[in-house]
Length: 153
Image (cartoon, rainbow, N blue to C red; front, side, top):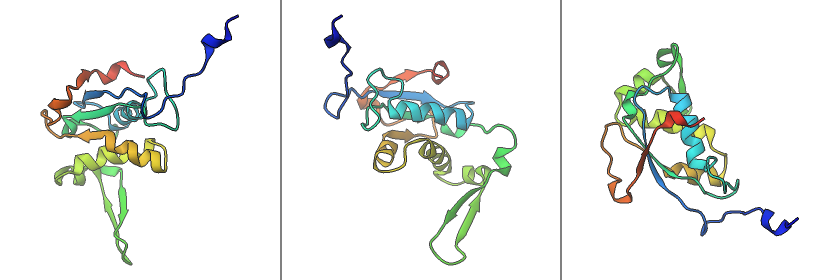
């Protein structure tokens, strides 16, 4: 038996091949969409996945304003943030955030951030996510390929 052909390949920053992908978020459920996007950003769908290396793709989400929540989460879910001052706890629902500028971006980033590893790697991986509320994006120079997110598990 030739054991040299069974060596485990560990990817590093120089050997990893990062791609640009476009995901259409029209009528997608937020949690299900973001879990698949987090796996794409992390690189879990690639055969050379290495846990401690950024080997995932750069993901562009378009039509982000058309994402939906299941059940009554649109009005009942509460996002909590703290200003840093006494009595500075602020609460928002997804319906309130949608009315603000950049609110849909915050909804999607919050969901994806919770599904990435905590620490230095997770913070750097979140920079590979680009969210656009409309159908157009400004990343055409990278020649991204459009993928159907429903084909991923």
